Amino acid sequence: MGGTPLPEGIKLIDENGKRIDGRRPDELRPLSIEAGVLKRATGSAYLEWGNNKVMAAVYGPRECHPRHMQDPTRALVQCHYNMVSFSVDDRKRPGPDRRSQEISKITSEALTHVVFTEYFPRTSIDVYIEVLQANAGTRCAGLTAASVALADAGIPMRDLVASCAAGKVEDTMVLDLGKEEDNFGQADIPVGYIPRTNEIVLLQMDGDLTIDQFKTGLGMAVDACKKIYDVQRDALRRRYTVPAEADEDTGSAEVK
Amino acid sequence: MSKDVMADLKRDHIVKLLSKGVRVDGRKFDEIRPITIEKNYIMSAEGSARVHLGNTDVIVGVKLIVGQPFSDTPNKGVLTTNAELIPLASETFESGPPGRPAIELARVVDRGIREGQAVDMEKLCIEPEKEVWIMFVDIHALDYDGNLFDAANMAAMAALKSAIVPAKRADKGEDFPLPVTHEPISVTAVKIGEHILVDPTYDEEIVADARLTVATNEKGDLCAMQKGGEGSLTVDEVHKVVELSKRLGAEVRSKT
Image 1 (cartoon, chains in turn yellow, green):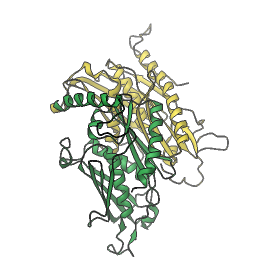
Image 2 (image 1 turned 45 degrees about the horizontal axis):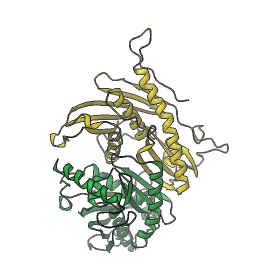
Image 3 (image 1 turned 180 degrees about the vertical axis):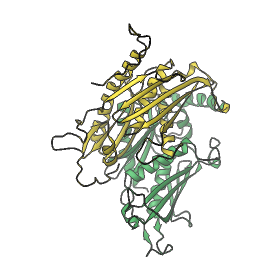
Image 4 (image 1 turned 90 degrees about the vertical axis):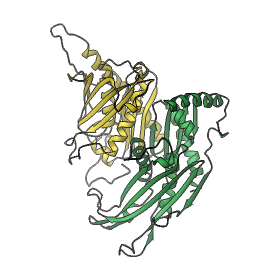
């Protein structure tokens, strides 16, 4: 971000206004979500979004450790975002780094807003997000998957959080940055949004934007979150629909 | 526990006053506390500043050493930002390795400096691919009365502007002032109930629903943003904070 110069011969947007992967400026990468993919976890979700592959699992509500963290009035939603060592081109050193700790913090905060934490005093609801394959936009993918996993766990929630980023590439506002756009673009705005109540629960931005560009970008991200929300709900609906010939269905939904 | 009860009591008091248009310390909703900046406070640092933002007291030291560039930016210096929230500054801080709040603080300040292109990093290159200046921006909270984000951002900018690159000592030519080319300034606002207040005190911060930090440059464009807290913001509230940040950021910039 911040205008890293492009390598020679690469254009992020061509003369027809198409992006490097052939998308229109306001087009999402293909997104599919599958709910209830893990056996041990209370709830889980697997998400593929472009070339991102993200697994989310929820354990709990369960006893909160360490005990001094317990809140006698409500549950703690504790998110742990992690990138697998082989999820990126240069091997990532395993374990939490500062980036992942920050993402864990803001994701926990976003999810806390939708969970009825007051129903489960003294407990912890642990949300594990594992990025198996990363290709830009993993925090949005993680938050989107985590909300489905929470719902799959049967945890009472006000709504799902849908998340998507907008950004600026070659002075054009675009939706859902791909890897090259993330690396060589001019700005990135990840947004977490609750469609039903029109609330923003996650918002970051880096790069260089005029106020008007920001307004456009935020609007694009919010609109996209509404589409993502449909995919999330569809994944949950399929999870709990028993088809005539099978007892278990793990259908996935495609974005149109 | 006792902290939470106090927060509830304080919250009632603060909200009651806000509904009458009054803040506990008598400020207007869009008024920043008095700022004092002492540059070159630490002689052993290459640049430093101590900032009082109301009762919040932060010190930032800049150190420069010769090191290796990252392989993807062979002709640029390196920026490393770190924050220590030491027990001296507040009963809520604990000793030990930086926790998530400290990491978030450091990364938000870092993002302002980096994305706002505060320093011309190419001028910190000594020999491409071999030697560059590594710039450490270390944030130390001394007294925590809310809004460390803005206090640390101001202190970091002031420290950078006062910094001298110690080239002579490292046998790399003559000393020169750190090339500060832009001045990103962050303004943080919190939402308490329906109200948006800038530059929150500690009490306002602990009872706040959500927080939004927006960094703008001298052109009034946006360079970094971070939402925090478990509450939500509407799109209109986000735009309101962006406008406030642009206007107040210009005022703060004239003081640093």
